[in-house]
Each structure stands twice: as structure tokens, then as C-alpha cells.
Length: 344
Image 1 (cartoon, one colour):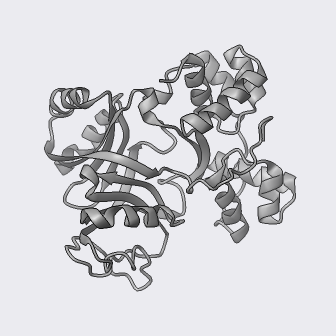
Image 2 (cartoon, rainbow, N blue to C red; image 1 turned 90 degrees about the vertical axis):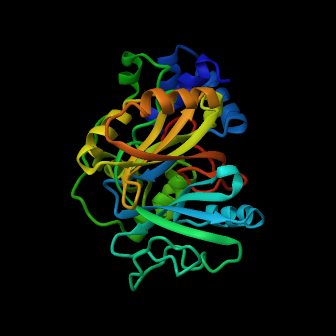
Image 3 (cartoon, helix red, strand yellow; image 1 turned 120 degrees about the vertical axis):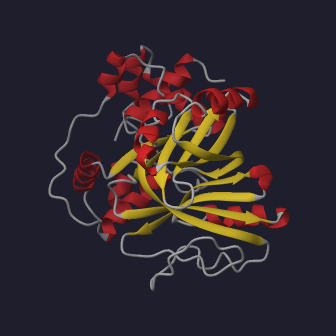
């Protein structure tokens, strides 16, 4: 388990993923060297990483949840293949290793098509469909479903409360980045996407790395980064092993909620400490959640006493997560990218 200072560093990075170690140290009352050492150790031992992510509700992409049911022998190879794709995130093995869950990001204007595989339950078949066009024909896949994420109630910039309990309100306020002028909104350019690709691997990448990737000056890269953050299009997510924070039983929950109750139920669920994600989707189940509980008994208590008590939830399906192969950022490269330790 992480100690108090570890949790404070993780919480600080959630507030500002690019905060200089010196500012975090000042807020936590320790030396800059201590924070730097903790950060390096957490990266090695707890999977800590800061990554830049386009916001689901404001970014120029549509997001789809994909579930692939597979024979046991096909699951591992297919899951690793999905994790390596640049258009995926949150690739997980669930249901004892017989199912793969992933989020796939599709540029606005593109469509979704699963290609007519066995057990295909949903797809649009749009002319420019790119989503998983090569997946359903692989041997070992028995069912495919894809559902569009419509609205995020919890998740994205709003983190699981398990990583946001370490700092006082006053400490949090001292860490918040200053407001920036978002400038005139404009579509993402090729240079913007090059900048975002660097940040997907390392959200604390130095301005020199961002300038090298985009061809801009360091000052231009810094201004564009600040503008994307100020507009809400870009935020910085913190990846860390949730089991070290008490979330040892990770479970995906699909719910069917009466349409007239969907917003009320989702808003209530977003206040539950056990949940890290609450999102409305298309499909026969219209609400998706991710629970992080302290073991099976705690999960049972949550499902029966809290979630089960809500009026409007007609049915629910649970799938325990066996392993997470990819979180919000790109698959970690080796060796890791150079990190801006003194601030960015």
C-alpha cells in the first residue's frame, strides 16, 4: 500500500500533471529531492504515469466501448494487439480472461463497423468505417459488440476518489494551475496531433520534446499546450495501480436504467466513492460504471446495499477485471521518455 506522502504526490499530479516537483514539495512540506525520489519509485513500483488525454465530451473524437468474447486461447494475443493500437485505451481482460473490453477513439465524421464477425450485436457500417475492421474475422472471437459513449458523469478529468483524499482543500488550491486564455478554438492540426502523441506517452514531457515533435518553438508549444488545457479539450490523467490504493476488486458494471431515470441515477452514482467511471452509452444497457472495491465482500456490499437500492435500475451485469493491459495513455515505451522534473 502507498503511504501518506505517496498518496499526496499522486493527488498533486492529478490536480496538475505538469506541476514542478518544487511546488509539490512546498505544498507537502518536504524537499524537492524527496518528491523526485518518490515520483521515480512510484513510476517503477506502482505504474505511476502522467498522460495527456483528449476529453471525451469536448474533444474532436467519438468514443466507443467494445466487448469481444473470445475462446481462452485467443484472448491474450488479441488483447495485446488492441493495446498496441493508437486508437484504443482502457484495454482490459475481464470475465476470467474470456472477454476483452476496450475503448476505441474514432475521429468525428468517421463511422464504426465491426465487419460482420460471429455474434456481432451492433455496428453502423458507415462508408469510412475503421473501427476494428480487421478484428472480427480472427479465429477465436465468438461475439463482438460496440456501443457509443454518449456522456461521462464520472471519469476523465474527474478522478476516482481513491486518489484524491490525501491533500487538504487549501493544499489543493495551491496546486491548481493558473487559468490560461484558451484563444480562438480551432480544429486540431497535424502539429497539434504530434504534440498530443508525445503527451499520450509522457504528460510531463519537456517543452524541448514538444517543440521537436511539432516543429514549433518552445514558446509556441507552451502556448498551444496551455490553450488546449484552458479550452478543456486536453487534460492530464494519472495512471497508478489502483490495488495499492485499496481498489483490489475492479469490476465493470453494465446497467439498464429507465430512460426517465437515467440522469438521476447516473448523477447519484457519480457521488459513490466506489466508482471510478460512470458513463451513458447506446445499446441494450445504457449506463456503464467501473467499481474499485476492497475485495469481493466489499463489492457484494456495494452492489446489494447501495447500487441495488437505487430506483430505476432494471438490470445489471458485472464483469470482474482480471488484468488491465492499457490505461488512458499510449502503451509505455522502453526506455521511458525524458521527463521534465523541474516543471514544464
